[in-house]
Length: 82
Length: 420
Image 1 (spheres, rainbow over the protein chains, first blue to last red):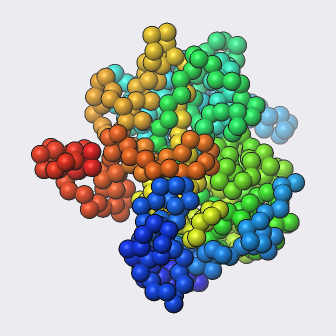
Image 2: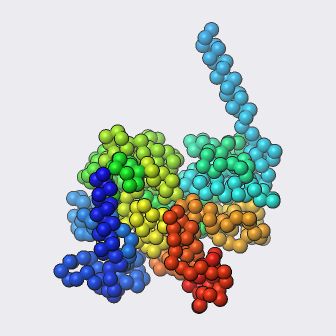
């Protein structure tokens, strides 16, 4: 049941955030400055821009959106492999 | 006395089993126009579906395959080895007839012995066939051609069916979390809840699924910290799905994590569910599909989900070009969308789509290395509209057409107006 609820919440969130509005490349969407949502990219051309392009697709657990990182990767800096 | 009877019975049964396994070269028992394939095991569902269609043709083709790891297949083809069955994967299978049910396991046959000079006609890899991804593979000889085909996505998967309340409650994994769990091992990663190596299921280092996922999380396949046994470095993808699913009601579902090709995952969604993935430098996490319940691979196609690779077809070449075995070339042409000399009575694209793969003509991004940066791409003959219409629960906003006269500046392809 927990996962059902979580997926339901994420679906609702995705619908709310759909398409990130009409922002320009690298710019924010139309979410309003006070919502502090990460920018999505219109007209992506690079690999990173494609990953962060505006989309209506459902996204995963918002608790794991950037800037979340696990404890052994502070700021995204990873320890070397053994 | 009783032991003697049991032994005799077992020996008799073994003898019967042996007698029932035909020689792969037997036209009557196995089939004509045989194509021997060293197959990536994730591609088996597609080979079975295609094999049935090929047996129904006026001039039938018989697919004979053994499922193995991509790097093993590359080594066999590049090293000009004789056809090599993978006993761990069940041996050598053949598609027996046009009425064979591709959802079932095909019968096996006994291929010519090693040393006979019988080579594979085709090898299939799901990673770029180079010595970066397969360090022990020989260099590519000029006599083998490599043809990139459809795209295969890979997923992290956990127990419990999609949309059910059983199994794991996890929905998302980040690249950093995956790096730590796979690269340091569950015990050292400090990534809850995946902290127990007993419930972390991967593959041997030669397997494309692990190589491809590794390329996206910065952990080479050989560096994955998996328990050193066949129950955790699992030879066949289907067995990984089974192992994950088996933990749904054991009390260990939350700790369980495994990896799969999407075309193995998709039919198993009633038992397991995939995790959304957030790549390095990505803001949000996504599933391969536009939603966990969809099958549209939209995020693979447009670059939001980067864990994918091209299926690559390796074939020894004839002196004049084309595969040495013309029937192998026919199979390649069908699977990559090339024109086939004799138009088949079926749409090969449908088989590719049904298998959970994305035809290259439906992709909007590309890449040139395993886990490498994505770049925008427009296919020469796009089929995105058709793809969207054919996936399970699919629909498309594209205009249906019978010819290009109604497509403006676009082209009518597969019944829909495409941009070009």
